[in-house]
Length: 362
Image (cartoon, rainbow, N blue to C red; front, side, top):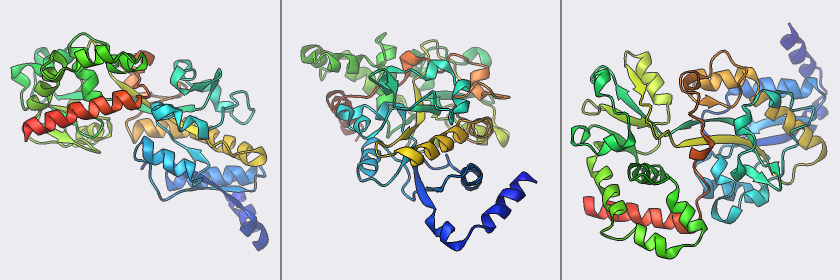
């Protein structure tokens, strides 16, 4: 009934009022914002007396450089940045954002966010967050329990190098830094050790670590040579794979059709990512207030539950009926394992590692 009244009030608006509505442009990843979300949040804005309506720009988020270009060209007002993008490449994106007023009365759902996610250093500027946690996931490896017995399921990242799994697992090809992290973990380094050395500008240690015939590069080559498949944007399945790497949504679809894939809970933990809501620097006054109303909707219970149920993501909110994998593995969001904002130096070194591996495979 309330929704009908809101829609009726919209119809009563004079034509000049409709044309006077200003746009709040959202820049996001495919699947994050639905048509229903747009309708509902626009109804909320009207009911609260805001002269703004949201629209999702046609350009979909792809990577840090592309998102930086779109924001710099002032093509959006609200973004869904991956956390480590904010301070990548000399913090170029952070300069285009503004701090979040976490005490705003329009962010009433902020109190329901997981406190472990609200003060992550890579998203902070002068003690204030440049982000609102939204949802994320892990670079997970899932085993087909229709094919693999419980006692044979790997327990360590190191098991991916075992002969028994050769050609039976897959890797993501595009976001290669995850595979570098796995390699470092398998050698008992921190997964982001390369970045830690780059931050210290310890080029001598980096040169030794990544020597052409060194242990890290050889281990990395072995990982790629052992892989039975690679994928770019979404996990691929075939009859030879018993373990697949995945962001999660594809696993849910497989299991809905009779699959029995389950997350391997590696003792080393899981490399994680978090997508966030951000406001561009130019937002001011009433428009900024409207943006806070929009953000509050997306961290509300209904949307947060949807990203668990439909996208198999890990939600930022704790006030839900189910938090998906977090219900069974509460430590998946380990701040120490969130992918960092790689420097240009470490990023280029990892690219060189991939090129060497690719050349050898060819």
